[in-house]
Image 1 (cartoon, one colour):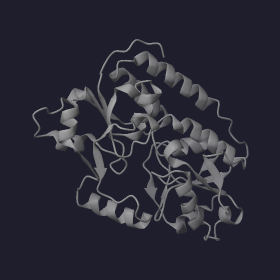
Image 2 (cartoon, rainbow, N blue to C red; image 1 turned 120 degrees about the vertical axis):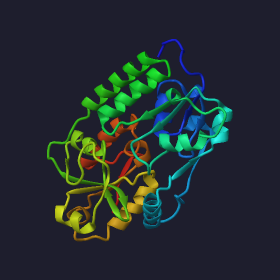
Image 3 (cartoon, rainbow, N blue to C red; image 1 turned 180 degrees about the vertical axis):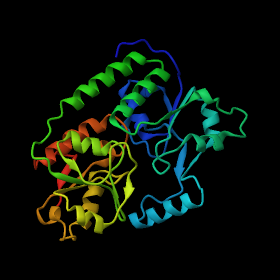
Length: 301
């Protein structure tokens, strides 16, 4: 991390994973603005530029209905404070184009600043697009390059790849269902199936690089997984424990009867395209061996 500082001096990150990566790169002091979802401990006191139109404290079924209605109506799920963004005068704004539900997209930024005198030039907005582990590492390199520290990005990506390759998989190949939402159920998508496979499991629903998909409990019963991992997007371990307890009533499922329903810290390890996904694979491998990881996973019974 001894590379000389260069590149943008003022960075706005409208994506929690990008904020995490910027701090991993040693660039936290350059971050002048963040999204309402950015929870890295280093962002305290930074300007918050976004808000969600959906009440994240509502029950999951109500959140699903609100999101579905907004999508049908063509409404953006997030708003950006354009005047504040203009006031901050960032050299680089980081957003994403992977999921309209998860975070601000470039289109939302464009709408927010369209009529402002200091309208952002296109080359000052970096959209991260990774939907796989390789894509996350590519985004890390792109972010480091845009921030003027490409060597740091290369070194960090190489270290992360080595840690990924070193995750010790289980050998008994249990059939695993990951739930990115519980009511209604959505299966894990993007890099999550890769994490399951890296851990030695067989992913029963969903495929690497593909969006999380709505399913039914009838379909889940037909696959009858050996292990269910509740990793609801946007939530930490404690909240996912609560969601997992709701799954315990489904006694028709082998995983429930065998005591193989687990909750994990989705925000830190599974939901975000950041380096936490590397540790997330190791946590999955541990729980497939029946081992809880303090602060990261727990068997729910």
